[in-house]
Structure formats: C-alpha cells, structure tokens
Image 1 (spheres, rainbow, N blue to C red):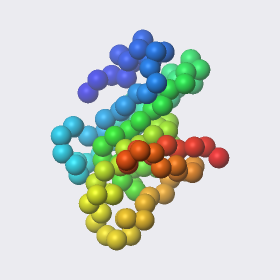
Image 2 (cartoon, helix red, strand yellow; image 1 turned 180 degrees about the horizontal axis):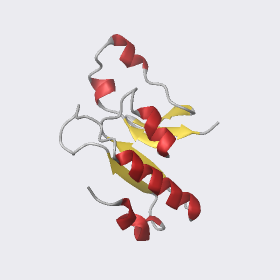
Image 3 (cartoon, one colour; image 1 turned 180 degrees about the vertical axis):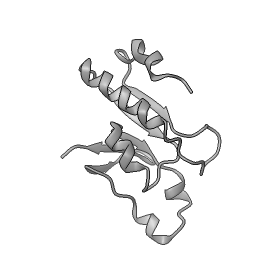
Image 4 (tube, one colour; image 1 turned 90 degrees about the horizontal axis):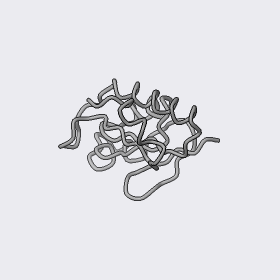
Length: 114
C-alpha cells in the first residue's frame, strides 16, 4: 500500500485524493480497515494546510463501513456492491452515516456537514 505521506507534495495542486479500500479488480471485496488511518492523516494534512481537497474512499463501502469512512475524514465515498448486488431488499433503501447525503453522479456520494 502507498503511504499517504508520499502524496503530500502533490495535494496542494490536487482537487481530490482517492483512497482505495480494496485491492482493485472485482466488486464485493472486503474493506481494508487500515485505509481509515490514511484518511485520518490526509484530513489532518488538508486541515493544517487549509486545502480545498475532497477525500474519497472507494471499495468495500457498505452500510457498516460508510460511517467510519466519514468519521475518519472522507467527504466522498463510492458505493458499488450494496447498490448493484444488495443482500436484502432493505439494502436498496440506502445506508446511514453522519451528515446529509447528496447524490452525485453514478454511485459517488458527497457528505455535507450540517
């Protein structure tokens, strides 16, 4: 896994940092919990340097992992399997997390603080 610190020199020119929380390739992979620490570090760097930077998490995001992603500092998440392959009809209704959700394009969701 790439250290988030390696991206620091580039973040002042970036609009978005995408943190992959699965090994890329296939839908339905388990969430890699260690990515939350990368998100926390990225949020701290963004805040310390007053950057306008979206922090996104992609992979393994479910109703169980979306809250920790947002709590760690992500303001965007990409959700795939829970929408396209729900385990139960209740999963089609969406997931809950702090803040209000605004639908983005496709399955990207931005979290807007209250």
